Length: 182
Image (tube, rainbow, N blue to C red; front, top):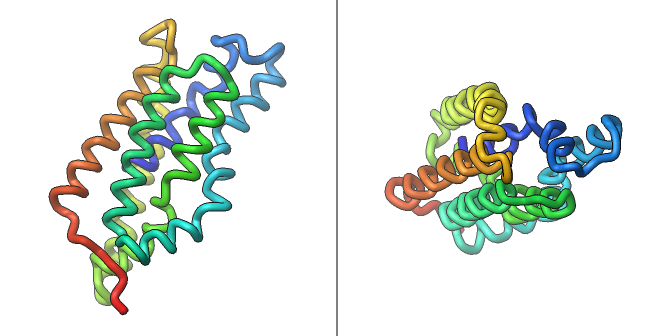
């Protein structure tokens, strides 16, 4: 859920954030900046997905997920205090894209945790939870946007960091160490 919230909670307020912080000269420019800011995480993921697979093979999926949740936590906090469009794009690119391997780990974790007989069920459960968060995340982001006028994205970003922290604690405490079997 942390990944889905971090990625989509911005959708409801990205254009408003760009306008509120004076990052654009007009509405068209605001839409361009908002769109780039929203997609920067995917641009960061493209060159690193296979590297995350190598990382997981060497250190295990649990270790990779913990690194990813820490990245989402830090990225959420940094994005929440950004006052510069380049910093906002860089934070999402780096922390939600380059340093987060969740998308790479999802399928192997489903197979490992669910086994042959339940991997489709586990995949469905994770996607159902993620889809729920994708619906709820932008609403929460919109409701909490601007509560701190100096840093309008701080509250929705801190909520994402809190979800990442909860996921991190859960991973650390309850997820078995999943390492590639040779």
